[in-house]
Each structure stands twice: as C-alpha cells, then as structure tokens.
Image 1 (cartoon, rainbow, N blue to C red):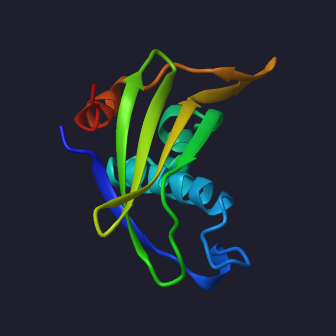
Image 2 (spheres, rainbow, N blue to C red):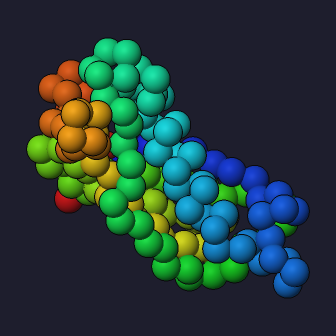
Length: 139
C-alpha cells in the first residue's frame, strides 16, 4: 500500500541561525502529519475520546535521522507509513523529501491509552480503526 502523503513549507522560524531546519521542527512535523493521517481516517483525538473513551495516542518512542539540510522556503513532501500494528500500539515511519532528495527519516511508536482509577493505561486499538491503519501498513 502507498504511504499517506502530505507536505510542509519550511518557515523562517523553523530554521536555526545557519538557515538550516532546526531539528525539533521535524518532530513537530511528524506529530502534525500523524494527526493529518488520523483525521483522514476519521479519528482525530477528540473522536477517540467521544467514540471509544480513549485519551489519545501518546508517544513512547521517537527518533529522526537527518540526511541532508533543508532551508527556509523549501517545500518538504512527507510520507507516513504504518510499520507495525500491535494490540495497543502502532509504529510509524516518516520520510521527508525536498524535490525527491531525502532530507530526513523519522520514526515514532504510539500507544492508545485510557484513564482508569489506576491512572493512564494501554488500551486495545479499536477494531473500527484497524482497517484504516492497515491501509497504510507497509512491511
């Protein structure tokens, strides 16, 4: 299956004094691209709570490898692929390209959670959401 695709323009505020994208921007863009993907699948964070009683999909792991610089004014194409679907969590891979040139590769692991008397606990991925996630599953 093809990955989910979106894009971002690099703003002045995304760059460090050398004019290169400052690394935290990639983590912000990964989070934003994940939320675009889930919205396209019909389950934003509010719907998770309203429809399934879940508090969200917090990160349990994240990383990014920087391959080439990007700068103010560049347009980055972002591909999001689901690389693992577990009982309560998913793993995702992000590829950032500027004019087909690989700029960065990121990864996230997220877990679906709910609040209980004991605090935040893992929750099973709702069955209704699995087909959408599987549509972007690779590997």
